Length: 314
Ligand code: GRG
Image (cartoon, rainbow, N blue to C red; front, top):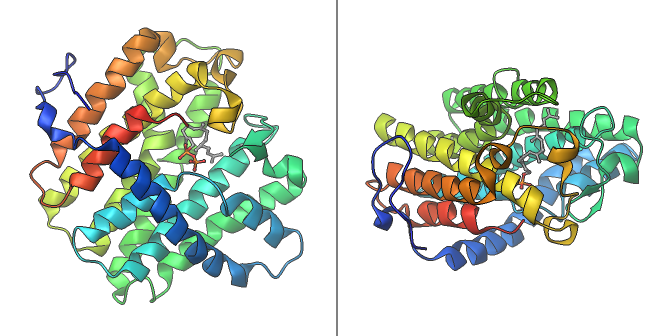
């Protein structure tokens, strides 16, 4: 990827900060998803005893999605040599919370969508009550996974993981961001307000994924902080590109309904900056994200994710 020097606020960023090979990440993500799938299915299996509920949980959790947050967690943990089964369990917890948020976001009382990951949303395939319960069950299962000694032998580490996930998922994170998003429908938001909203709604869980990897790895404090800053910028770049794809992608490419932001009269990075401006901003953010971890050894793969984020088509 050719990265232009950033135009906006913040320090200038060297183009070399971004690892060049975005195909590497595409292939690596797909390989990771294939390895992650049976782990996720195995962890879900004991929770599937209740008819319909278990099916709906599996329908929404398995066989789909980019698995970006789990990939980030496992890759960050890998920097510090964390045992893969431990990292995979924490990654499964993050993906369960992500999956719950998508189920609830698609409900008629929220985004009212019928298409997710290229197929019917959970409430369309089952019914609203089942979708609410499947989301609730995935959310609560995530914390049980993190609290289990098989995730990490040290209770202090497990408590820290639980603290991070509850913070990122709740009122001071994703749920708070979702509320701001609902309140903002029909309102013209300034860029700083839009960034705050998305920092909570989308960014908090991305930061949480990377930080959980650092916590499992007992990363030194300054490296943990740098990884969090990388993830914050990455999360924002991800959201800016989500807005771009909402106006430029097709339902077939995205696996979800495009054009919904305009219908809901939402402020987006595209409405504020235009499509080209938003793309350029996402590129700047990705370069800054990569630069934040440039001095940490072994971070090529994480830096390549920043490139992938701005090139993704779904
Ligand atoms: C309902 C509590 C609650 C929260 C909803 C995450 C969220 C908050 C809403 C999802 C709606 C949305 C389109 C958000 C923008 C960015 C985002 C989180 C996209 C979906 O994540 P991907 O692209 O999805 O990683 P996959 O399918 O790849 O897992």
